[in-house]
Image 1 (cartoon, rainbow, N blue to C red):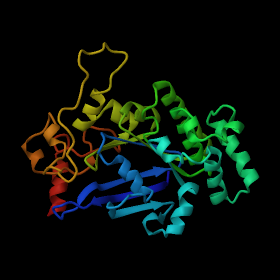
Image 2 (cartoon, helix red, strand yellow):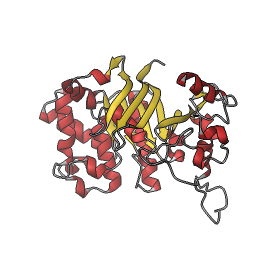
Image 3 (cartoon, helix red, strand yellow):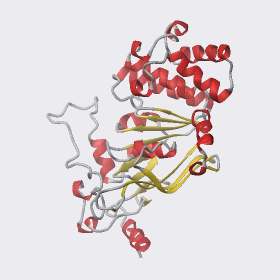
Image 4 (tube, rainbow, N blue to C red):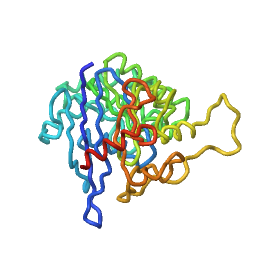
Length: 337
């Protein structure tokens, strides 16, 4: 499959008091094809949401996209004018944000929030746009859609608000949908309904999807490929089967180990990952995960591993760990030289 989205060596910087920029996203590269579901997983602060914001060119000041490229359909997104960006967002790529209450306008009726996008991007008249909006609300499972068009967001539950956000995001049949933690704070039943809804949208429209979550269980149940991020970098990537069935990076092992399995007895204490991620602007020397890693050796504290083919993994499975793949240190040393 040819790439719909091609992100290469993306860097997002924030200023620090020392004068040296903090690389919140540091050399991230990945591709998404039409109809493909790519998951980005990691703890809070790993850079996954910021990566998606950079793809959409929504990084807020004082953050800046300091390097790399974002190409969509072969075109350079970073070179788009403000007018081109406004047309591109919504019509070609859309985003479902983590908190539906903050992403919806509380003072605007939900129907108008859908028809506005249809009128702006597709040039629909008000009557046609309203009919399309009602149909969208029905498709996302909003009961009595015609009447609910006139309600404000506060009249909907959390799960229903998320459905409205999905209706808005998919209104213009975008080629790429970015869903940033779309199931956070929803109960398990509603989570499953939201994922089923996204699944239907992908199947019907051949839409590429980037699903962002801290929950590897949610990611693995929906996505074809998974990118594991830590401290602004991709530390492992591969198919969902490879990442869940044969993880290579110690961080991926730790994420999987923290998932509570209903098929197993409930342990007296929940498994956690010891330590904490590096704070903003204080990335340690060497491998960022080394201070928390049970497999770390002295070299891990001084050398920063590159992302290379996992020697014990499957085809296309890549890992940034010098213990698992010693050549990862060699690549980093060569690039530094």
